[in-house]
Amino acid sequence: MKRWMVVALALAGLATAAAAAWSTGVVERPAPALVAKEELPSWGGADRIFLTKAQIFQARAQGAIDRDVQSVLNVRKRMHYGDFVWNDRQVPRGQVWVSVDLKRQLISVYRAGHEIGTAVVLYGAEEKETPDGVFPVLAKMKDHKSATYGDAPMPYTLRLTNDGVSIHGSDVRWGAATHGCIGVPVEFAQKLFDQVSKGDQVVIVSHAEPSRLAS
Amino acid sequence: MVAPRSQSRSLRRLSAGSFARREKRAAARRRGFLFASAGAIAIVLAAPLSIASFMGLEASIPGFDSAKSFLAMMTDRSPGDRTKGELTKLKQAKIAAPRERALGKITKPEPPKEFLEAIAPPPPKLAEPTQFAPAVSGIAPLLAPPPGGGGGIVIPPQAPPPGGGGTPPTEEPPTEQPPTEEPPPAVPEPATWASMLLGFGLTGFMIRRRRRSLSAVVPG
Image 1 (cartoon, each protein chain N blue to C red):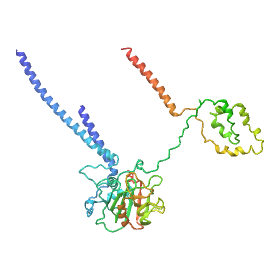
Image 2 (image 1 turned 180 degrees about the vertical axis):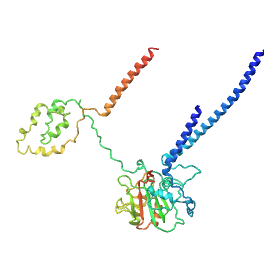
Image 3 (image 1 turned 180 degrees about the horizontal axis):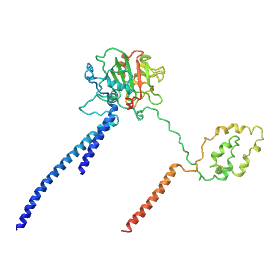
């Protein structure tokens, strides 16, 4: 008698776990695939991940991106301070835009909807926080010296706001922060500088969290 | 001699029947155990999955590499959230001034009389007494000048000299406004109350325990 109870209990637990997995998984589960499987391009090889329509839809609903992204770089490992990945092989010419995720401390550069570069960034510390929003690049300055902070070198500056917030090369390391700017590794800044032209948009998001209600 | 044989035969028959039954029962038990263990293992294996899905994460099962969400991919490559403690180069916040003032020394011995007499009575303060009186009330009686001096403080006799009355107040009093310190409150702080109550509680507990242990010992 007892063992049947144990078995029944086990099965009940299993059923509960399955129900929990199913019912909560509904929220996060991408939309069911269409009958005909979506054909994704494969020219990027293993270095590029193409997003399905469902993934794009989900990402937009979660507020992670505000425009369509066709592919992202396949970063196989967790990046550390000062790391970056750049790969624009075979990526067509097109509109360039930059997305900055402050919470994840990441910057992504997109060209024609394909991610061509990503890096770990520094951002503003408390009291001088990096603002959220969409900023067109106002000016490009290759060898800029800070006027506000004692001639601090800010190579490859992309100015975003009139009060001085910009993206520039800096020593990205653990424990550092900026005065509201976005600091990227210098080499990355150089590549970014070459890609971005005046007027291209930079989207800064600080709160992109997967919210259950959103999707 | 006969009886035991028949007995043993019957026993054997009986035991044969019971043996089969026992075998059956053992098989059932084994099956039940198998079921139970399978269920338990399934639960254990499913636990991470269910927890992950409950927390709104995407469980990654090796071999079933499903399409990750965009955010999940970004999270995978990110060094993580920046925590406050990471910022080593931030300016240290100034240490806040103590919010509670140490109690004034009430047991301070009274200075010798000659000394008190030697010190001139404090210059008259015209505007201050109303502000100052409550603040120093705790210490005032000790520092109060002898009665004779008190008479001296009274302003009218000193005031008549021309200009003399006017100058002292302008020289010092207004600048010497004491920081608005308040006398320590008469009611103990909550922490003091708490520790007192705790002490009472502990005392009561010990007494109770002792009594109980005594009562436990006595009947035995």
